Amino acid sequence: MSTISGPEDDKKMPLLDHLIELRKRLLWSAIVLIILFGICFYFSQPIFKFLAAPLQSRDPTPLVYTALTEAFFTYIKLSLFVAFILGFPVFATQIWLFVAPGLYRHERAGFLPFLISTPIMFYAGAAMVYYIVIPVAWDFFVGFQTEEIKLLPKVSEYLSLIMQLMFAFGLVFELPVLLTLLVRIGMVSSAGLAAKRRYAIVIAFIAAAILTPPDVISQCALALPIVLLYESSIWIGKWIEKSRAKAELAAEAAEDAKAADPTAEP
Image 1 (tube, rainbow, N blue to C red):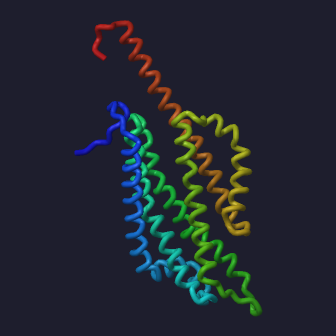
Image 2: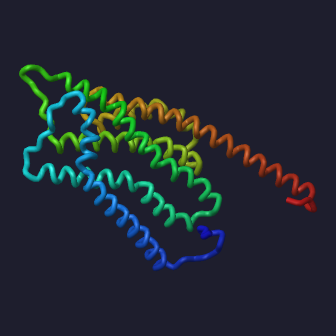
């Protein structure tokens, strides 16, 4: 079974070998993206029907397109977006395989959980959009119809809105992964995060106003999870710091015991 070497193996790789390895990882990522794009384009109509279901269940009015090429390029954009989301674990793995040889064994063991949790949290954010946020938002927007005003949604605009919301929520759900990683490597502390809580709340609502459509429901639906995820990052950071402190105390105790009895087995 092959293992990933690291700096502790004392092997230096020439720059050309690094470039060859980078080209290999990019090539595999491109191949996976092309294959997934082809599959997603073949199933683009069922995928779009799935994304349009929350709106169609509230308003059976068919979506329209006003430009001759609009529907075609909408399916292209949709296929590329879904292919990237589905292939993200593969892309992250290729990045890991390129970076891992430059890390020590304990560093690889520490970073691997973050690599695994990154796509999971992104998918969780996208799922929250589809199953929780969108139904509430669509009920709100569809409710503005009257006898004189009827909804006639465009295919491209609807897809752009869906992708914008999914990307925004998926990105926001990476917040605990990023902050706990920063705590683990010592760049920030849980106490520092707690002290800056008020600024984080303000930034959360500003980011929600930028990343979501200009309505209160979508903005609050994004801002509130940001605040909750920030709070969860503080608690996870405290747990990491406690674990690190226990490990350091155990290491110091072992060193003291060895200094007191040099003949003792480590």
